[in-house]
Image 1: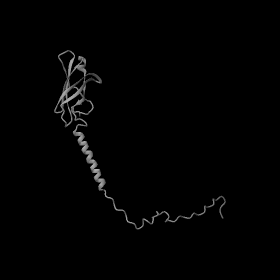
Image 2: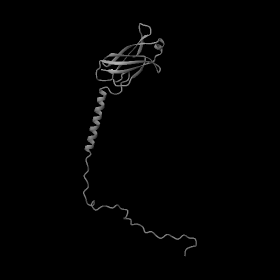
Image 3: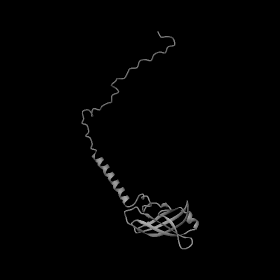
Image 4: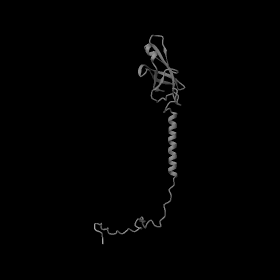
Length: 172
C-alpha cells in the first residue's frame, strides 16, 4: 500500500550496545596498586643550581669588564670602537707649527682590573668623512685614558670636524 512514486524505506539498522563505547580495561590493571608519586625535589634543585651558575657567570663577566661600558665615555676594554662628539671631554687644540693640531680627550675603562698602558687610535671625522687619525701608546691612571695626539690638518677641517672615534687596540 505504498503511494505511486514513493521511495521505499530503508531496512531498519540495529543500534549498537551502549556499553560498546566504554574503554576496555585489561584484567591486569584491575585491583593493582597505583604507582607512587615521584618527588619533584631533584628537578627543582637542579633548576635552582643551574640558575645560580648562570648568575655567577654573569657576575664574573661583568667584573672582568666584558659588557657594555657605562655612559659618559666609558667603554670596556673589549668593546667596539667608541665614538663621541667633539666638545666637552674631547677637543682640538692648535700646535706651534702650521697645520699641526692635537686631538685631546679622555675616556674611562669600565673594569675592576687596573691597567697601566693602552694603545689607542683616534680618528677625526667631518660628518662621515675621515679627516685624520693618530695612533699612540698612552698611560692609564685609575682606568682613565687621557690622550693628546698630534695630527696634520688643514685649518678648514680643524673648524668643521664634528666627532672623533677612539679605538682601543690593546690595553695592559
